[in-house]
Image (cartoon, rainbow, N blue to C red; front, side, top):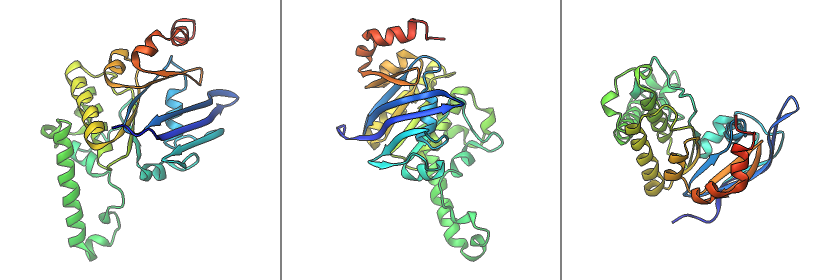
Length: 259
């Protein structure tokens, strides 16, 4: 059952670039345990908002709260440790490493990262690496990439790379995952698998998802509620059916702002 309290809040968030406001006094919230969509015309400020939430950018004004605590201004690694992870519209896989290695690098504070630990505490390092290895195999099986574990990530298809991005987020047991265009370049078979994975993670593990997507069929199937941004501002929110009939949303897409 969804918690009525928001897990993420943006309060009057603004981000300016040389006087141009990519995000303009945006106020919105994402409820815990939901798969919330974020849509809007190109240039609406969606990815900029994601960059602000995850610490890749700092807001010019406003506040961002995660589980009731401010995170605006924190560096990305500290936000990561709070339980927020993200994927990117263009996958950022480590091309010259295997699919399995891409996952095993994710967990933080690995004992083997310190130069003396393998020599002085070899058993502890080996035990931790074994746990990470086993978890990586479980995650790869979950996203149906286990058969590609030893392939170089660069050789995956576009859809497989999106699944790998999702798999990497699962290696750190997040509370919230931000997905930027998960459906872009993904064929129907892999898209169905991706959607099933997201629904299972939300339902069975309680992970909250915030999803940027242009494919309205995917948004309609996957997300509820849906938030709409336009010209850097919060515009509307509701079920997919309500959003499709909202005159403000139709105007934003068809009234000269779209492309």
